[in-house]
Amino acid sequence: MANSQTVMLVIRSARPSFRNYRDKVAFVLHASFVASGFRVVAAGRHAFAENALVSSPTQGEVGIEGWNEFDEYAFVYAKGSKKFLVKCFAIEDKLLVDALDEGGKEPAHIEIEPEKYAAESGVESDYDAQFKNLGKLVSDLQDELLYKLDEGLKPVASTSQSSSESNKESESGYYGRKRPVPSFPPVIGGFGDGSMHVGPNDLRMFPRFGDHPDLMIPPQPGVPPPGVRYDPPPPIGPDFGPGFEPSPFRRQPPTRRGDVHPDLQHFRRWLG
Image (tube, rainbow, N blue to C red; front, side, top):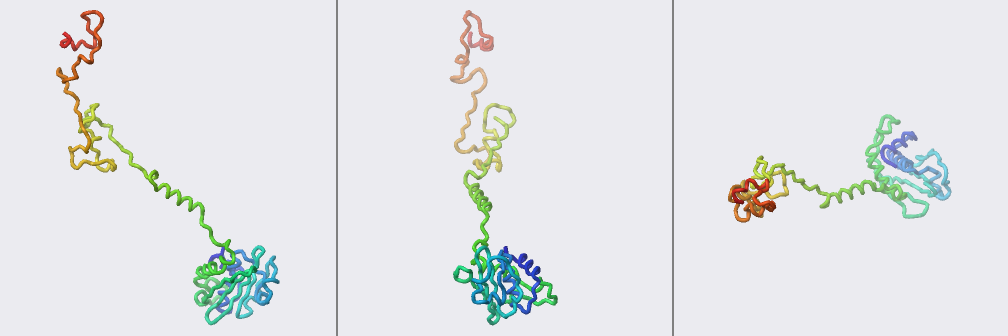
């Protein structure tokens, strides 16, 4: 894949000599094709031939001697069984590039201003100093030429990324939301009295603010929530109240007359 790093590696390995800014931009074009998997099968004078696209071989690879022999540039590349012709023409301060595949489709085109991407350097072998904005130039060449000639070079969105996004969307639904879990204190009746009855002093009747955000908080202490009813237990003593006399709850008397069941000894005064 072509990027500023791979293109610079191709330039350093080829160690070309540049005459001017147009030479530098034209060689970046060539290096971008090589970094994208294209093989050069003709360059310079041979690529300018009238039947260069047909007569150039599809196998092997050739050198690029004489690539900047003229003020214009031409290359023939091969990838798989297809061949591609690339020509660069200098018009005023721009370099016009046309790329055509062997199938005869509409050529891809891009116009480049060399001064935006080439720079002066006192050391000929210091290729890093001879270019500027190299990443943008390579990106433009990809979008306007390489991707149009070979659609397989276009990056494909990651399936793992799309699946993770879909999982996040499903988790954001109703069942994906975490529901608050009540944490009632283990206290019944009055606070700390150990009673088996749930009374108005039980903490469950008035949850503390912040513990149970889904429950209604009373407007002020001592006021139960709407719909809550407290039924106190009957008083403890001789008078149990209507319906709570001991007689309905006692066992059948023993068969022997005068005997009282041991469990009912304390009820003698009512049994006579």
